[in-house]
Structure formats: C-alpha cells, structure tokens
Image (cartoon, rainbow, N blue to C red):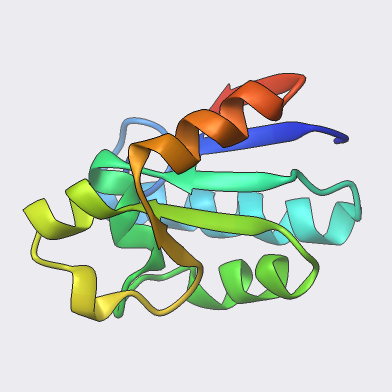
Length: 112
C-alpha cells in the first residue's frame, strides 16, 4: 500500500454496538500488519482518537504497526475536546496540518 493513508474517524469500525466495532477494528489492524503491505500513516480524529488512548482495545495492534514504521497521528483538537491528551499511549499528537500533509502526500486515502 505505497503512499496510502488511512483515516480512523470512529472508536471502532462500522456502525454497530461498541464491542463489535472494536472487534472489527482489532481484526482489521491485525490483518493489515500481517499483510506486510502497510500504509504510510493512520490519522485519528473525532471519536477515532480514542483508539490511541489508554483503555483502547487496539493499542497492541497499533504499537505493532508503529514499530513497522506506520505513522500514527492523533488530532490534538479532538484529544483536547475529549480531555484525552494525557491518555495517549501510542503514536504522536499532531494538528490538522499534520493530517492534511499526510493526505496530500498520499496517492490514496481510505476512511474507516
């Protein structure tokens, strides 16, 4: 997935109850990592920032992706809004400019 950016905009994947959304996201990230064909970045905003914070069901999968070189960017405005800035456990805190930069450099953007 050369020059791909993934946008994570919810605290899970799809429209279902919270547990199913998080199970789906965990499996997606696990299989993405196993594929070896990794995106350049995953950007987290709105409810998606909760995925990089303490208590997230996908912290380990995200740590594995980060260790493989995937940039994980959590939007600072959203973290502040949800009062989660002190609870980030993986990735970097960035602004909307960082997300725009990642998108502009990408050949393809996928929103989950």
